Length: 180
Length: 104
Image (cartoon, rainbow over all chains, first blue to last red; front, side, top):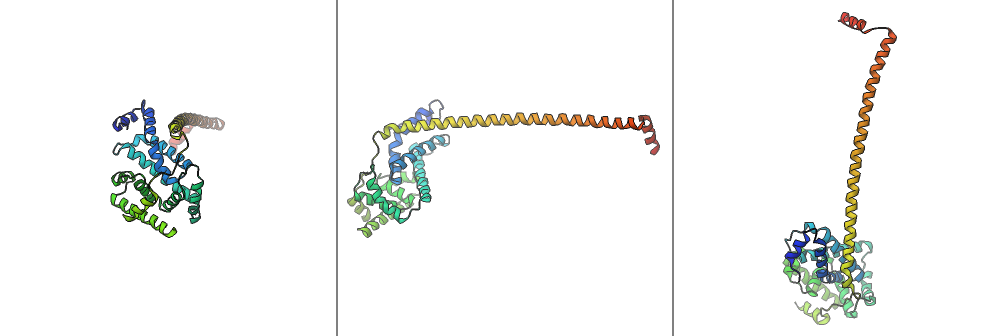
């Protein structure tokens, strides 16, 4: 676990900035990757978004005020980059029900997806949620993140997050009840 | 929440996604390389803008200076024209002054 105060000081020092940023990348790459991957699903897309996340963070380093933890700041950039990516993808290809219909077979043929058909079906159910609700569901269900931490990361109230999660769970359950 | 319990019992919360081998070993080097390339580009753009501004300043000074010299030449030309005209009419300055004083 890195010392946040020390790394922030090093990031403000031009002679130590690059080395300090390299440390940040090593420390947070995996946890950010999995957050992104659960949203964008494909490894190649997740790789692109993760690179963009760190590049955006590098460009915005001078604006980082240490009002939040550096990890929270990075998570926020990663979520925003993922949501922007999904929005752009939606504009380029119309997300019709056929595309989501195909998702199960796409995942099953993806060499970087290890789950069975049930798992693929769960991902298909999650893919039907609006993007931000999907992010909330993934963070709570898979990463068991506390609402307080999520609220800082997403800039949304705890009450709204709880409601969003509750609705997401209901929609996914309904999906399986209709498709069983 | 019963629905959450239903999902947990049916699907669990394990991670079904995988990454290529050595992905996280190689990723930091790839992203730092992109950042170094970005820094070089930004430096070149800054130098380019500085060079362009210097060029604009010097060009403007040169052009303005040229215009001022042309004005001085025109004024000298005009004066010479009037004096030539007076010579051709065979009128001298004393005659002009007398005429103007008498006219008042």
